[in-house]
Image (tube, rainbow, N blue to C red; front, side, top):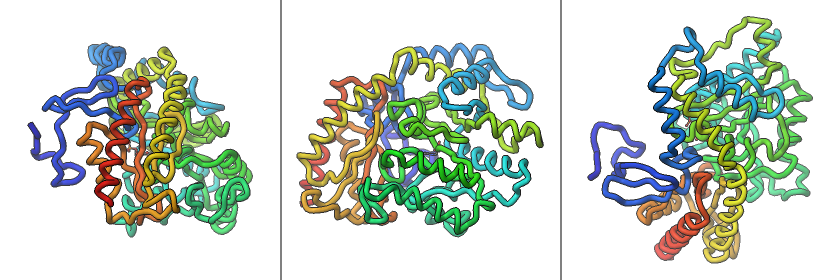
Length: 446
Ligand code: PLP
């Protein structure tokens, strides 16, 4: 049974299966078909579906109270979650502002950064720099920062000026250089941009530690963020790490930026924070920034009706406790290695696989015409990624679309990011469906 009713779908005329339920790494539609969740939905269902402990926490909180307004009450779960997050975050990132989506988290981060400089008497410091090949959210502020061409194009004239920095995309270096001889030219570019715009006009620089939707787990080289942070600090510019996709254990460290050992001034979380059980996201701000605001206006000019919702806070707390108790970070690293080895074998077999990149259980696969002879991409008009995703879904595997990496005109890529609880046997299943899907696609292309 397919339900096609009044609900507006992402592609209006596409027929979507109607989900029935989920368990572990599988989702089931109402016809009983099983889908291996190879991308945790939108890299969100990090601990898998139907986890008893989370459902219990949800019920327990619902019996107490589901909604209170943040300007009238705080709640035990929100306070405990704030404490839990502060125990995970590096350095003095201890102050948590709760919102409901990654986009809202980044909107909040932008506002806090601008407000911080205002309160310090630097009113001109209000521009936020970002990179091409990035995604920070769909609301107009967060979209302004996003270098995701297909998502921003339609609204380009409404958005704030576009991102300025080239991405650290080693597979197709925008400067035609290669690491390490490049001496991190892509990071050095930040210095040049700051000089052009003037540090006195810039509040912050925002980046996803590993580029997600706009490129497919594009992973910067060692020392990249160390250099970026150094440049930011020297120029009095805040560094915002958008950990909406990479946070909460997804890359094998608690946060993606931990791989570089860098401490941001503001960090944003979403997706895996509640692992999809309820909407929940946050901007985490350093003590130092909050102190300036406390001594100044004493309030953050942001917030939403559902901010710090007790129900969502209880769920997120249960998710973070579950990750600790089950020691899932170890599992992310072990299973990530196993998955990566399997994908490298697929690369040997299929010439349309150009690049495999990522960390932990966040991997990107980029497709090219023939990797044995070069890196020529397919034009996006051939819809290779869409075809692959649809075929995989028919075969019972969900993978995530990350196409458009090459100037928004080409660069077919998918993200493979299963729940942390995936077993080796389930990874074998994932790889066998992916193998068969790529074989079918290649056969059609010949
Ligand atoms: N930031 C990153 C890195 C993301 O990947 C996303 C969503 O894909 C967002 C922000 C926006 O999050 P949301 O869709 O929850 O608004």
